[in-house]
Length: 78
Image (cartoon, rainbow, N blue to C red; front, side, top):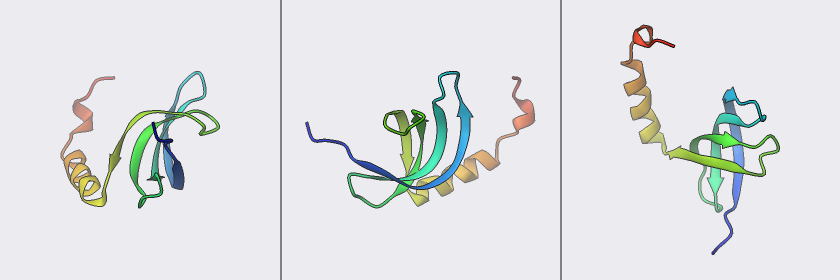
């Protein structure tokens, strides 16, 4: 199996942190030397390991942004 390589080219923000120090982050990530894409996933504190996540291109991110704008957050109970 080929080795997976990645580079976080831009850290956009941390969404949350769990008790073990892993953070759910929104970043620009280049996977295997390809063009960086928008990425949401959990990362170990030293970024040596990651969990499963979602990678989006610019068009997908724009669509997600439009969908999120339509959500009434006041209707969600925590």
